[in-house]
Length: 68
Image 1 (cartoon, rainbow, N blue to C red):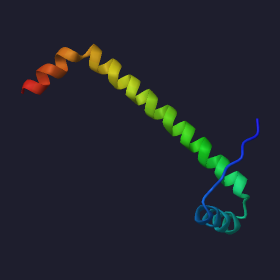
Image 2: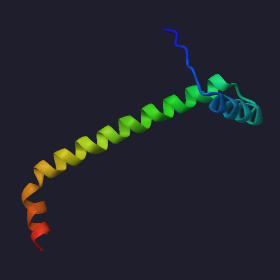
Image 3: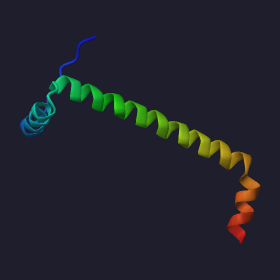
Image 4: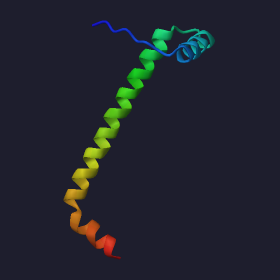
């Protein structure tokens, strides 16, 4: 699947500068940024799910700790 990405001029210029400095393509940098975002979001979702599970499993303990 192909996708066009429209960036504001300032963002594109900054991206080009970074790509030139790193000796990489703009495409490679954008792809890495997207992959990093997807990993981080997956990790955040996992932490949220664990938090909900932990809170449900230990609701009584958490309530008692809150009363201290």
